[in-house]
Length: 370
Image (tube, rainbow, N blue to C red; front, side, top):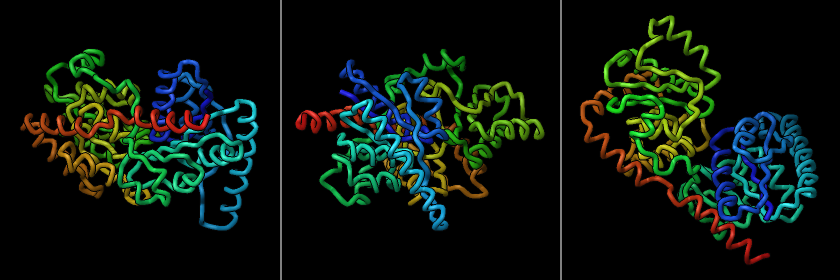
């Protein structure tokens, strides 16, 4: 069996694809996997480290601002499709699995022309444009959130699976994760991160948390700024006299997210589908600050699924977001029972069987059509 994975630019598309690929390798060690991505995406760093071979093809996001930019997108997509088709003639895939973004468009179009079976996974409560368009070529569309189904025209193709999460997040022990990371066992641990790109609202909140809890005994703050914000954040902390606090760790990117979430008492983050899935898989209470700059307000609906079950709190982004979150944390610090109950509720929302559902759904169709 030969499988092509595609989907990229951000970790939210890449990591679910890798989780699916890992499941296929676990169940079929002899299968061959190739990842196809874009030169500007995070897949260039993540995929080779993960151990899958990577091919790069041209692709471009849709820009409807004028006819010339639309024409450019069509031209780039056409080149990407042609290049992908040549790759497929050499690799001879049986299956192509797409997790979305514009990276996937030329790959799925080429797969349709080549004759490989196409499967799509949509992570968000509001589906992306690429997956909605490409669903017409798919044998099955797996949904990270059931509500996403209403945006697809062909209901017979839809199957709710939840969002695949890497095995690194399964069954972590808080005590062991804290020991591994060098975090005091009895500290109250707060982690802030704004996704793979970082987020100003989250970073502003983290700075206020450092102001409130910097050097405070029995509190640890883990602050992932996002790579593009790291230098500015460090400069701002120095100017404000907040740098060098003994209980604060500032990094551009949280490398070991599985152990970090396992060690955390409360996570403050955006609510992209991947973040929500990893947080719930870790049984971590969360304060979600949905991005206001996404299509269909889908981050709000991603978070709401956890909030409705008692595992998280939503704080809408505005000028007072940092102060409101600091006040919420004061209440949580004062009542460990609330945090414990939120952790239990968060874990109940975890997509524990998502990868198995996707794997079994694909194999069921593939084996019937061999």
